[in-house]
Each structure stands twice: as C-alpha cells, then as structure tokens.
Length: 201
Image (cartoon, rainbow, N blue to C red; front, side, top):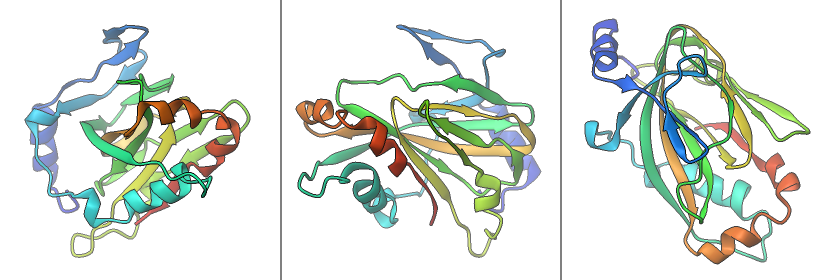
C-alpha cells in the first residue's frame, strides 16, 4: 500500500462497508459517533506476517511481561481492515472484549498518505497521542515502514478526523492463552497502562 495510487485507494474504498461498533451487547451503525469503513477477514489478504516483525516481541516485553517473574503466553488474532478516509473519525470508546481472555488490541497502520486521524488514548489520568502520519513520514515505496500501537482493552481511545488522504489500519485482538491469567493481569492496570506501546518499526 506504500505506493498505492489514488485509483487503487478509490477501488479499495469502493469495496468497503460502513464500520459498526459495539454498544453494550449490540452492534450498531451511527456515523455521528463513528464514520469509517471496514473489510472483514474473508474480504482481503495481506502479506504482512507479524512473526517476521519486532511487534510480538515488543508487545510481550513492554505490555505483557512487565512483571518478569511471570511470563504469559499471548495470541494475536487478526480482526479487521479499517479505512478512515477524509472526514472519517471515531469518538472516544473502549474496545468490546470478544472473549473473556482478550486483554488488548493491536493497531497496525499502513504507510498510505494521510493527515489527521491521530489516535488519542486515555486512562483517566494521562493522555497519549499516536500520530501515525508523523511516524511514517520517512516511509517510501522502496523502503516502506509500518507503525503500530498496542493498548489494554480498558483504555479509552478515539480517532480524530482525517483531514486528507486515507488512514488504513489492520487491527488484531490480543488474548492470553489461559483465561485465568487475564484476571490476574488486571490487578495493577493503572501502572501497566504506562507501558502502552507507541513505536515505529
């Protein structure tokens, strides 16, 4: 996608559906709260293999194994491709856990040209801003880069309006392999949220 033409992006956008979001136990569409597009896993393919990147190691080290005496096994489950084109946004929300052992989310941002669309994360005490357009400013078609951010499920986050271009992301749900560990992992949530990863590879 690093060298995608405007026509290719237009073709991609034309195949997408409006993106819903969870509200309680319901899945709803409300473009006053979330305006975005999505593709389900069955509708796209990507050559990206997380195992070939530093992402799993980075998340394991900085987000999961902050207590070095306890090593937890984690699983990355691809979820959706999301497209935020000009004017798209997502107001503050928390991700809906898909299972009891889901503990967080990973968002991989592809190097498509865009402005705006900053991701704001908040835990009630601190705010963080993830500006993917800046993180990817040195990406080129010959040497493409991706950016990523991982965070816990109880972190409130929002996507600010995209002012130009298209912000394209691949999201993953993060799970502990043992459901019993997910409960223990939440005991010092407030301190662990400071380990939220905002890095470029």
